Length: 547
Image (cartoon, rainbow, N blue to C red; front, side, top):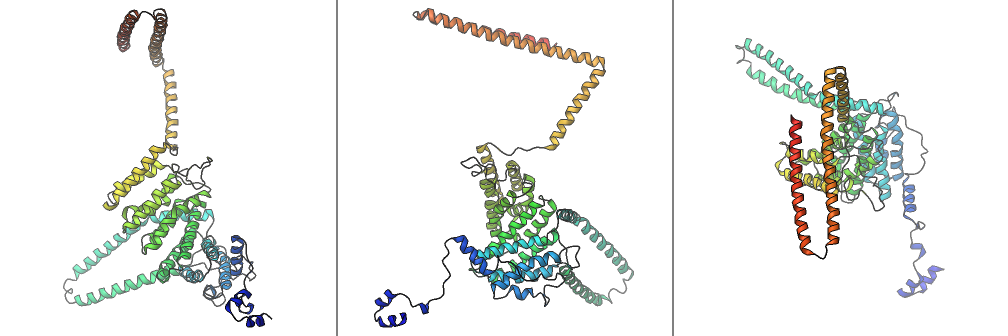
């Protein structure tokens, strides 16, 4: 019927009045009133908030096996297939890395293959709510390979031991090479006659040895990549390392329309790294383990886009992790966490990156997250939850000054570091407060000094001669203090009497101006004479006390 009516309408105006043809319209979704409901609908369509119905995967199977097919699933054109594979990955990684299970573990090569498929999964994700939820799930994979607190504490201690023993291992290898060279020299000195005849053979052999050494190094690297690891902080750091390697490798193939989603996943990953540090009570070994990974993979390498984005979001994510930490950041742990950025601020290869570090790390902390920041106290007097209220600002300022005066700092960056130090000191002087430092060493020293005084007093009491001298000294000090107090009282009484007399004289002789002038002169003379007398008395008493 409607088609007949549309055919009957000859003009365009008449057709517009009748409306669009229903047969030519796409079926539309029902109208959603709120943004939250629309986001929920997007996630339901993408399959990110539904219940998994498939069975769990066998952790003994490899990632590239035909039964698992993770690479094919993660790069599937259907978004529900991709997202269901990501959700099944949580259980698979947890059971495969468990120590007491029969699974093999995860190697660095396995993680590189896994991140390659996950990169394509995020590359094909559409709509902002779906991209954010998927980035959050990818960052939470870090907790699938995490160990318990005891295991991570042991891993942190082991990493500190490895870092401390690097110099000794190098020294041993150098001594071993020297001993080999000495033995070779002795052998060469015995065979001087055959040296000229075998020179060409030696050169050929040396070149072959160099080639063999290069092949050995490559084989060692391949062997290290193939080594499986069980759960713990070392595997979590390896997961972060392979993630940044994948991002840096695929960065040049990314277009401008998809760069925001990868910025989002980098933010979520760094946030989870700082939460991991916070839940391990800012253990120094774990902090340095993750800091070395971030510095080696991102901060010390190009392109600048990744490390500039990392510098921009570090302080915000660190403050959010500190807000949920069981133990808040202090000045020592805070400086340990931002150590790689402090290294960039003194010896970076790019001026733009160094200026961004000073602006987004040091100045941003002072302006927005410190105790003396402008946003510390709100209008209602409540302290912001993102404020690091246990970090001593003076300690951070002193470290900035020492970095500026360090001989290893590049001369180009000294002026900016000194200006930052001046800004810290200027703000401290303006606000007039800072975090109170509690030095346990000083408290112990004070306790030791009190014990020493008590011991000395007991020793004096045991000796009668020392006790008599102590009593004489106490009586002399009491007499001197008593005489001084009496003099002060006399002066106060004299001043009160003079004031009373002056008031009475003024009341009686207000009509006689000449008499008032003479009385004022007399008062001045009396004041001068009293001052002279008191000064002479004090000199005499001091002489007596000296004798």
